[in-house]
Length: 355
Ligand code: SAH
Image 1 (tube, rainbow, N blue to C red):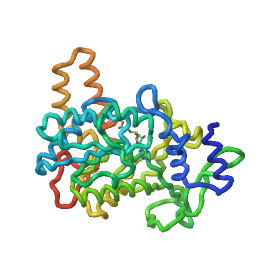
Image 2: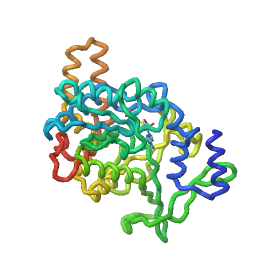
Image 3: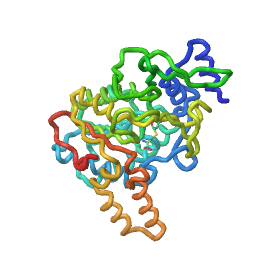
């Protein structure tokens, strides 16, 4: 049992059952014992690995994708390069290195990281000297911006709703004989849950903080122009069921055990994000499968260049990284890419073969 487990039990004893979103929020971002506030979760010694940690090509290609858009839109300056949940800062460091080939772009760029994790902030400082760490998008000075979020939205708390014969119920976490268990409660607040098409026992999810971030991004893009690139594992159709999951040491774990010790995530509901973006007056491109997006923006050419310079061992690593990022049975299909822009602005490259 963890200290956070005792804290959650105390909260339930005093306030009653809590929503899945509240449980997830305490587990991930409790100021002293939350999973994301206390450790570096990434890499072989951590709990999971992400695309920028798999290969430098990922961040480089995103850097070139943004540079291409910047050239096409008339080289605005300054360019605020904003990353949500930047992890070790690897994606940004790789992107900035690749962007150097475009004259004047590096000089125009100002990097801003939104991050809750102090250990990771230290790593970001080393990876990208000169970045700033604002508390919110509002603190970033006016100007054209690119927003990048890789595996950020999946960390945001989700609410879960279960279809019952009288209607939708909210899935809650409660205490039974000293153990955390799921139960059901009344759905709080005004929510437009679907009327038809679901059977008793079906689960759907909503991510209020995800919707909040889309609104904040929309405001920024409408005011100053730019693009947002959201990459995550998720689904592009309605009602994908229960996707709430825990991971520890690269293996699945039980979501209600060891609060604060495992990564808790939910698949990103790209339908919800896209709808929210469009309601906020943005144009949405995708979601397209990550494999298709990376091929569209040139992963094969980039890998070819690296292969030319590589020794035998390194060649094997490059080929296996491309496979991991692109192939359908690895990250290529489950991971999706959604791009948002202000209505009327040019379309970004890479979204041609919508899946
Ligand atoms: N983008 C990185 C890291 C992904 S892990 C990569 O691809 O490697 C998720 C990241 O989001 C971590 O940096 C984590 O600390 C951060 N994070 C999680 N919840 C957050 C929140 N509510 N606000 C800000 N950052 C958050």
